[in-house]
Structure formats: structure tokens, C-alpha cells
Length: 533
Image (tube, rainbow, N blue to C red; front, top):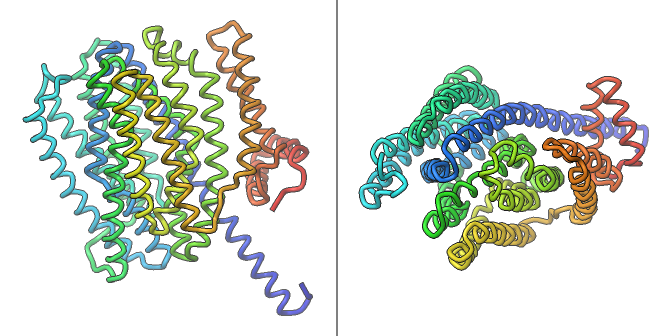
């Protein structure tokens, strides 16, 4: 570029763009770190709670408890349907377009919708209990029904407020609420376990935890977030919002039916409560592993992608899609590899020998969740660029696959059939998501890079598995996990998985760690070579 006033001005503009891009990545990193740390604490405390309850109740009663908690989660999803996703997307988009007044009015309108939606769901639930009278609650039908209502209304309202916070890019309230309520909850569950509490008592404490979460988050919201108020919304935004709500409501309700709902229902009908409990443990550990490694990215991706879409349109959202897909794939391979290596001894150590039969299901679910984690980035992109109709089509087809596989496999094979149904449905869903993504954008997944990293993960998993096998200790899984990470991270640089922007961001982070961080990056630089664009 010529050394002229115009050339210097152009270079300065490019430098400013690069600086702004790096500032955005650092802001995203800060939010990811904040959410991730609070989630780590929440999951650690939640895991302790799960283990205490499982050991106190035994497989059969724990299965009944798990079924009740699952039902609460499903009712909460029905209460909020499209409202949380739409809140985050449109509030962030309005802020990105420089219209904070629209953001406030959108938050107020959708909050009112959420209150009405929760009331309708609760009334339908009570009517269903009067007709069905679930056998799991036969001895305490109405106390459990009342507790379910309290838990669902409190948790659904909490989730709605968290969605508004995410739209405002304020992640402090949810972090504070999850940590404080988690600490209090552990104390209550520990006392209940010491007193040999019943299933109903443990579930009552679950409802109390939902109430605490709502209250603490609401107090923090007033401290960290902008208040919202009633007001007009422009006609074009209102039309887009209404369409998005309709499509997303249909989508979320479809997802709620295929998010292990069919598997749990069929297991509860054709198998035993113990099988339901094993499936619940697999789901809990898998969700924990996924959140530990990806919740920060998952929580912040949608608002940041929506804000970029509001500023620069689809091209910028597509760029973030490719970037997020690389990080999701790397995190997913860690989940799959470490899960295979560490699960057997972790289950024996935490839950006891009564739950050994759950190990194959847990391993299978961890591997599937890790390999398919990349679908989260595609779903976020489709939501941001208003391709919810594609997501509805994907969900309808995936639900059909889920129903066919569930009816064919679960009654005959029990827990194994549920896992086959889970895996077949998730692979079908990812294949459909990639198909519709190719029709919607020129953006592509970095397939070649992903294949190289997958090969590195396979080698790291094999070596880590052998290290666990030769160490005669109940804590050998710790060595296995360290071996996997110790091989996988350097190998990701050796196979040149990360691009120039990733490498610059990692260098910036490690430089803040002082001499150890700079030494680490110099070692990785020898493996990485010249950064690729």
C-alpha cells in the first residue's frame, strides 16, 4: 500500500478494524470466563447433590425422583417455549442497532407473555394429574403436585429473566444466583441425606432451590441490568418478533418432545424406575461435561452473534459460525475422549457399585454428546438470521426419527434401546442441520481441520485408556484424563487446527500469565509453525 495520505488513512482504518475485532473477542472471552466459572461451581455442587440423593434413595427411588425432576424441566420448557430465545435475540439485536428503547419494550412485552404462558401450563398440568394420577406419586399425589407447580413457576420465571440479562450482555446476575443458591442447596441436601429423608422431602428441597434461584437472580438483576418498561415497538420489528415467536414456539415444543422425552416416557412405561434412574445419571453427567467445557461459549454466542447481525448482517454472523464451530468441535472431542477414559471409575467412586450397570449408557451418551456438540453453533446461526423455519423442519423430521426408533427399540431392549434411540436421533438431527445450513449460507464448516483434530483425539484417547488400564488404582482415571489433555492440546497445534486470530488471542491470554504463559506459548509455537490465515 503506497505511503500516501490515502494509504496511511486506509492502513489506520484496517488497524482500527483489527483492534475492534480483538476487543470484541476479549469481551466475549470475559463473558465466557464469567459464565464458565459460575457454571463450574454450580455443576460441582449439583454433582455432590446428585450423588447424595442417589446414594440415599437407591436406584428405584432415585429413578422416581429423577422422573419428577425431568417432568418439571419439561413443563418449564413448555412454559417458556420461544420466549427466552426470542428475548435474547431481539434485545441484543436492538442494542446492536442502537435502539435500547426497543430492547426495553421487547423485554416488557415478552415478560407478560411468559406470565400468561406459565399460568396456562400449570392449569393444564393440574387437569392432567386429575385424569392420569401418576403411579410414581401414588402415596403423595397432591403434595408432589403442589411442589411441581412451585418449582416450575419459579424456575421458568428465572429462566425468562436470565434471557433478558443475556440480551443485555449482563452475565453477573446469573453467575451470582447460581453460586449462592448452589451453596445453600448443598447444605440443605447434606442435612436431608444425614437424616435419611424420603423422596418427597428431597423433591421439596428441589422446589426450595428453584425459589432461591429466582429470588437471588431478581435482586442481582436490579443491581446490574437496565430496567424494562412498556412501550411501542416498530411495525417491522413487531412483525419479525411475532413470526419468530410462532416458529420458535413450535420449534421448542418439538425439541421438548425429542429431548429424551420419548426415551424417558417409554422407559418409565416398559422398563423399570431403575432404568429411568440410570438414564437420568447418564443425562446428568453428560450435561455436566458439556456445560463444563462449552457453557460459556453457548451462553454468549447467541447474543454476540445477534448483535453482529444487527450491525453488519448475515456475513458477520456466518464468520462467527465458522469460528464457533471450531471451538465446539475441540470441546466436544475433549468431552468424548475424557468421558470414555474416566467414566467407569468415576461412577464406582461417586455412586457406588449399585450403579455400575449405568456405565455403558453414560459412556455412550458422553461420546455422542461430544461428537454432536457442533450442532449448537448451527442452531445459534439459524436463530440469529431468522431461519427458524429450517429449524422447525429439522425438528419435525428428527422427532419422527426419534418416535420410530423409540417405539421399535425401547420396549424390546430397555436402557440399551433408549441409548440407540438417543444416538440415532442426534445423528439424524446433525445431518439435517448441515443440509439446511448449506442452503442458507456460503459459510462452511472447517471439515478438513476437524478431521485432523479427530485423528489426534483418537490417538490421545487410546494412549490415555492404556494408561488407566496399567495403573492399579481407583484414582487412575485422573492420570488418564491428564494424559489425554496433555496429548490432545499440543496435538491440536501440531495438526494446525487453530487459525491466526485464535493464535493471537491465545498469545494475548497467556502473556497475562507472566513467564509461565509465555513459555507455554513458545513451546506450542514450535508445534504450530507459522499461523495460518
